[in-house]
Image 1 (spheres, rainbow, N blue to C red):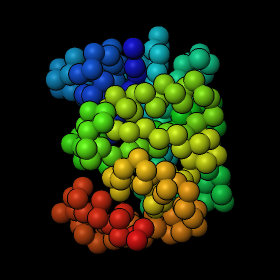
Image 2 (image 1 turned 90 degrees about the horizontal axis):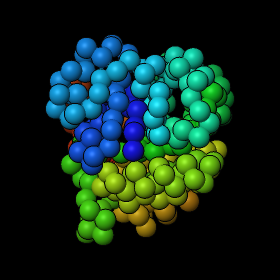
Image 3 (image 1 turned 135 degrees about the vertical axis):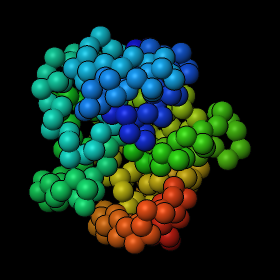
Image 4 (image 1 turned 45 degrees about the horizontal axis):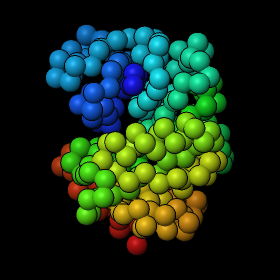
Length: 244
């Protein structure tokens, strides 16, 4: 499969590594240009390209950039065929992204992203910490394998995303429609807490949207209070504590 990945931060770079290692052809881009991706490309065998080229002739596009930067991609997606599956990994944090009035007023984050880029999306890999994505992937059926939720409106596209999540070492759970994807967003009981498939299915049913928003903001406050020494383990602990 040919996969274009836009974004080379924590999640994006790890997906480049995982899919390249699995034998997929991977194109990777970021906002700083291909020359800044030489090390990642050399390490993985992926091709470093411009963002415009990362969406050409591919089967799947994965967007892994800050939520607030999504409007920058609209022109790039204008030429992407309707049957190309687009998977988004982003999350909305107003403290980082700036307040987006439509989302603050109740629009589901993923629906807003879909509108910005002008192409249907699937939501996946947004509810896992980079540290967990890097170290906790296990073979299917392995004891202790954790689960991730995948949401979307197109059954075939969602099935492909579910399969790709499984290939990265996690049990993939149907998270429902894109309108329901708020259940896997920051502050929810299933967000970045590293739980099993059964636990995640339960978490998706008990999510309270207002509480999730409060938890999201409280998480940032507590994380900032930890300073530069905050680790992935700290983030995992904070998310779990907020959802007790």
